Image (cartoon, rainbow, N blue to C red; front, side, top):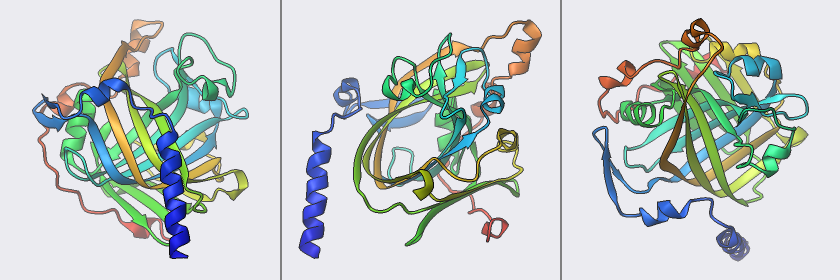
Length: 315
């Protein structure tokens, strides 16, 4: 059995090595270079190694999802007449800014001036600028907020987070100021060991602008789809999560994924556009998730906040 397992792992590593890497060549050329941005030291490229990641996608009301998207150029990705809420939690175990947990709640979107047909963005991801509009992105260290929000415009804020792995499940919870933010739990998919190389575009609103950043994930994933996918999602009353309750989130996920040892890379290239509206009053109402004042006074603390209160979500 041990020899078989070793052979199985070696076959997967060999197959994975044949897959084209999603990482741009520029990031390879930058390897070993140094940068200091907003006072934060970086060694290029911006990598997170051996970091467990869980994923789950839930159908949501498409019209309600559109109502949470700022500006005029983001549209919910259509999947069987529904939009998708994507929950992704990463336990970053090795980065330039220390260890931290990142908890993303996002809507799958396309970016452009015109609506696009269903499903095609999955095939022509770059053409339709498929990505995720990040609604809420708690992390549990101060330096992650400073870098993520100040440099890439991500809606990061510090919160109480955890990431718990058992023999049967993977779960993560986030609390904010004594209130439940979100709890997600997936049943571990069967160990199919699917080699993956993903490019993910994140769209975020900050300072009245829409920011696009790209990250790349490589690793071996265990994935389930449809009725085989089992997950539990609980939305709380924390300010960043409360608007999501209007999305009418379906109880059953479309798919779940578990990457025990993911390698991710955040591109240092970022794009930005003004968020626009038909009137000056409407543009002012867009808000843009705050101003630079929200990050100016932040330091580089790597201390984790206390874990959340799991009694809020106990069965």
